[in-house]
Amino acid sequence: MFGIGTSEVLIILLIALLVLGPSKLPEIARALGKGLAEFRKMSSDVKRELDLEVQLAEMEERTKKTKNLQDEMEGEEQKQESKEDKKDIQDK
Image 1 (tube, rainbow, N blue to C red):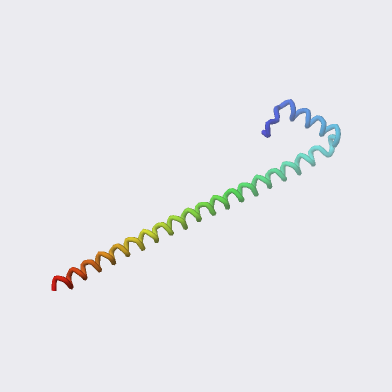
Image 2 (cartoon, one colour):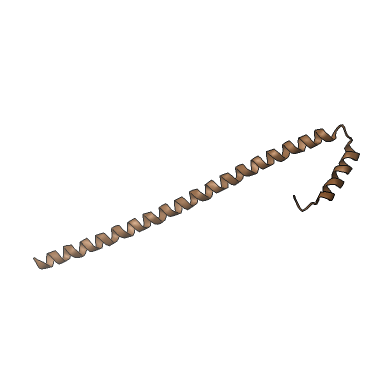
């Protein structure tokens, strides 16, 4: 947890107990817990949103590549048909 060992956490809690007093410590701990839970929820929402955007960008790129390949294939088919038409005209 943030590179803090057990002894450091105990020292921090002891100092907080001395500074804040035993009556306010549970309130502050509860508020801090709620704040951390909200932060985790928001960060997971942001991560999920970013993942969706990345997936969307990948899908758009694949769609673009597929469209380019289809256009190339249609161009090749038209060239082939044009060659066949010229050959037919020459044979007549």
